[in-house]
Image 1 (cartoon, helix red, strand yellow):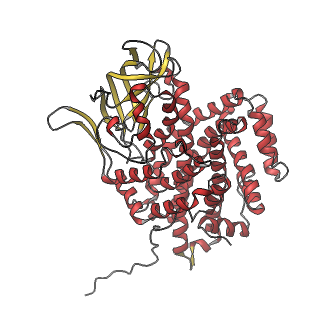
Image 2 (cartoon, one colour):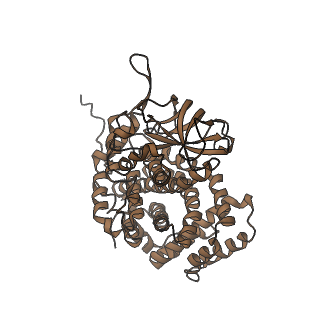
Image 3 (tube, one colour):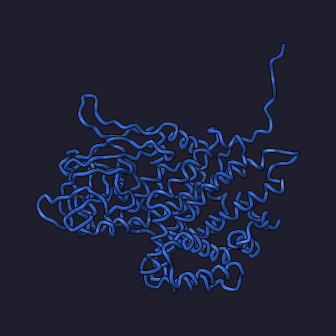
Length: 544
C-alpha cells in the first residue's frame, strides 16, 4: 500500500541572497541625491552581505536564543553580567565594522556621512533589529561625550570611534571598542523623568566632571552590558545627567545590581534590564539641573533612528510579500498579477517611496546643524517622523502578513518577528503623545520654524491640489495650536514634509497618486496601472 498523501507544490521559496541596497531603487536614488553617492559601492557590498542567507539566519538565531542574566559567578560572587548567543556577537561585529555607531563623528568624516550611515542603519534593520539598540545609543552619546567626557575617561574616545566590537567583561580602558547605554525611566514616572527619585550626592565637590554617589533604581536600563550608561538622577541643583561606567578607573566593578531582564513582546535578542544603584559612582555631565537638556541632545539622534529602524522593518516586510506574490499562484495566476493584490502591494510600495525620500531629506538636515533652516527642519520633523512612521509600521506589516496568508502568521516566516518588533520604536524614546508635545514645543519656541515650513512647502505649491489644500489647513491650525490637536498636527506635518519630497523627486504620475492616496480625505483611491508598474518595479530593483 502506498502512503504518499500529496505532492508539495506552489510553495514559494524564502527570500534570501538578495542585495538589500541595489534592490531598492528609492534608497539608491535618495543616497545619491542627499550627498552620499560616494558610499554607493560600499553600501552595495553591505547590502549583498546582509541579504545573504547566512546573515538572515544570524538574525533568526539571535532572537530564538535570547540573552541570559548571570547575577552570580560559580563561587557565589556578584557577577551582574549578560550572556548572549554567538549570533548576537557576530551581528554586533558587522555593525561596528560598518561604523553604524560612529561614522559621522570621525575626524575625517566626509560630507554626507550622516546620510550614508542612515542607509547602513536601514539595511541592518532588515536583518536584525535588537542589535541596533546599543548601536543607536552609542551613536547618540558620542557627540555629547566628545564635549563632556570626564578627564578620568579621556582614553575612551579612541575605542568609542573605532570599528571594533569588544564584548569582554573588562574595564573600558583595556578594550578596543566601547558601547554606551542609557538609564532614564523609573517605576513611578516613565516618560515623566522629573519624577525620578534616584539621588546623587557629591563625593567631594559639586560641578561638571565631579564624582557623585548614586542611590536608586532604573525600571528600564537599556543594554546593561554596555561599558557605561548615561543616567538621570536628582542632585541638589535638580535632575542631572551622569556618566556611570561599568568599571571604575581603579578596575573595580561599579555598584550596579542587575535585578532582572525584561520579558518583552519583541526586541528579544536585546537585553533590557531593571537595576539598582547601591552607592554607584558616576560623573556629572554638564551642570546640575541640566539633565533633561543633556539627554535630549542625544535623544534627537535616537529618535531619528527609531524612524529609520521602523522603515527598515517595513521595507523587509514588503520585500518578503513581493517575493512571495511573484511565486505563489491563485486562481490560475501569480498573486502579483491579480488586480486587487497589485493594488495592495503597489500602495505599500508607494508609501515606502515617500518615506524613503522624507527620511533621507531629514538625514541631510542632521548633516548641517549649523544651518538655521536645517536645524529647524531636523528639530521639527524628527519627532514628527518618529510619530508617523513608527505608528504606520504596525498595520503595514500586518498587511504584508495577509499577502502570505497563514504561512505569514507562522514562525517559519520572518514576518511574526518583524510584527512583534514594530511597536517598540513607537514606545522607546518617547511614545506618540511625547512626540506630539515635542512638535508643539518646537512650533512655539524654535526660531525660524514657520519660515522653514514656507520655504519647504511653498516650493511645490501649485503642483497638486490635495497638497495645497492640506497646506492651507495646516496654516490655519498653526495660528493658535492647541495641545489636543497635537497628534493631528504632527501627522499632517509629516505627511506634508513627505509630500513635498514626493512632488520634487518622484515621477509626476507617482507624485499625483501619492497625494491622492495619503492626503485625499475622501478615502482610498485606485492607483493607475502605469504607477503600479513603476513603483513595483522600483521596489524590486528594476526600472521599466
